[in-house]
Image (cartoon, rainbow, N blue to C red; front, side):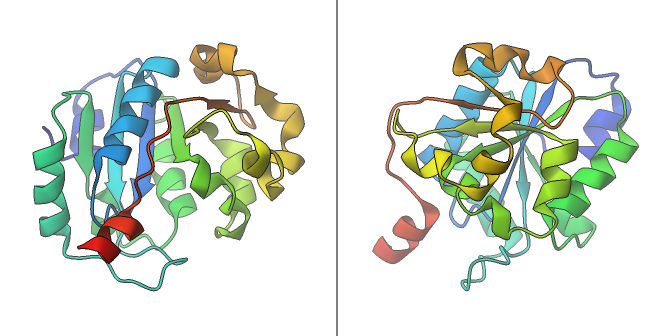
Length: 200
C-alpha cells in the first residue's frame, strides 16, 4: 500500500481516472473499503485515494492522530488499487474544494472523480463552496441500497438533477465534463465511523 498522491501522480503519466474519497476515517471501517471497491468497479477507476482530513468541519469530534488512522487503515485495506494520502493534512487544507483545486491544477492530465456515500450527499450543500465542487469535479455517489428518497430530495440532487447520469452509465462518468454526477447501488452495509466510535 502506497502513501502518496503527489509523488505517485508526479512520477507516472497516469491515464485512467482516479477516485478521491475524502474523510476523517475516524476510524476507518469496512464500509469505506466497500465504497472504494464498488467505485473502482462501477465507475471504471484505475485507483482510488483515501484523502485524510485534519478535521471534518461538520463534526464536533476531533479525529485521532493521522498515524493511528493510517495504521488502522493498513489492517483493513488489501487492494493495491486503494491508496492512502496525507495531502490535505500536509498542505493544511481546511476544506475539500481547496484540495480539489490544488490537485486539478497540478495534474491537469488526470480525470479526478470525487467519491461520496449517500449520507454525505444529503448534507453536501452545507460544505464550503460546494457548488464549485459540483461545477468543476465529476461526482460519484455510492448508495447503501436502492432507496433514493433521501438523495433525490437533497439540495444537491434537486439543483443538479439535469446533470445526473443513470446508474447504467456509471462507467461513462469519466468521459463527461462537469457538472456531472451518477449514483450507483450497492448492498446495504450499515456501518459508520460515528457508530464504531460510540460502540468502542
